[in-house]
Image 1: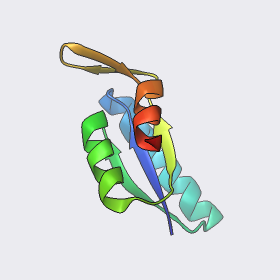
Image 2: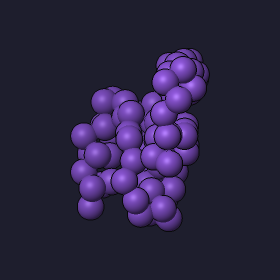
Image 3: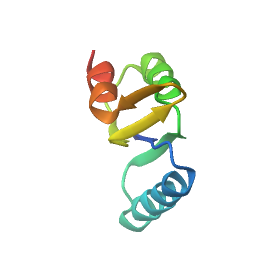
Length: 81
C-alpha cells in the first residue's frame, strides 16, 4: 500500500484535496491510502520519519506557520533528507 501525504495550511483546500484524492483512489481501485492530511509541515515530517518508506506527497508551495514562512520546496527537501 502506497501512503499519500497531504500538507496545506488552508483548511478548505486541504479538505477538498483529501476528499478528491480519496475519491480517485476508490474509483481507480489503487493500492494507496491517505496516511496523513495536515496543515502542519512539522506533523508531516514527524509522520514520515516514523514510517521511513516512499510515498506520494501533495505539498502547499506557500505554507504559513506562525511567524515562520515555510514553503513546499523546503518541506520537500526535508522529506528527502
